[in-house]
Image 1 (cartoon, rainbow, N blue to C red):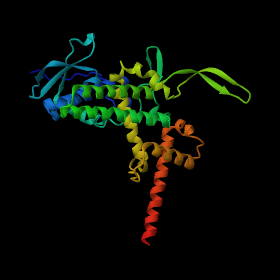
Image 2: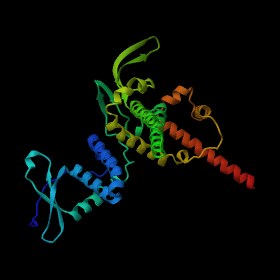
Image 3: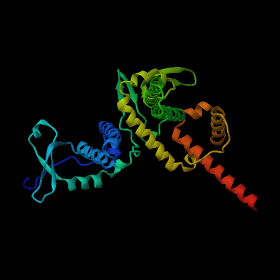
Length: 329
């Protein structure tokens, strides 16, 4: 039993959302979320969830939990903490369990919705001397080609993971499982190579009479960067991928909210090949928005193209409703 006394200590303020976390904090929370998922079968959902929330609380407050607990004079369970660092080695900060639960419930409820990470926690990273830049907030600078390429690579990754899981459950061969996991790893690295745009320091400036080269730092997406840089991300994929996956899916969730006619569309039900569907879509965009070539569409910002597609879908639905009303008359 410990004696109750008031201790005033200045702790870091708890963050109010994902946007306030540093890159290392987002990485650590993703690691804790994975650990929570793995522990659910062993200790149960409630215990795993409580452990996850407590570890996030300690991460944000920079506290370290001690192995021993005590009881206050009133009989409440008291947890003993100390701040991180050698200078606080003998510090003891008592907190009652209800206080910790209250803080977590009131301040960390946003952890329950991981797909609200609209601001990428990275900016420019360096891998083996090569600099890469991440997409801006809400991926407003990502091109249409870059966006849909990243989406397809992410879908391929999860397809491989799900297939590997089915093979394990249904007694598939070890070689078949390894094949799926290798393809998943490749898709993961290619997904990162797609979103992390390499630095370029030389561009062409065209005038009426000549073309001259100007040294300038630019970050322009090129489809070849995926093949060129895939291997560079292998060693850091386990750390970078969970964060970029969370960021990408968060932005997709945001797009679904602002483009409801596009993301809720079920299509016409026609059995068309993917290539024909892509050609039809590109031709429709060119006609609707006045683009002159497929390249212009692919190089346009993805969010703009999604807006065009959303408007096209909205108008198509309205025309369909009008036709149905005319038929009824």
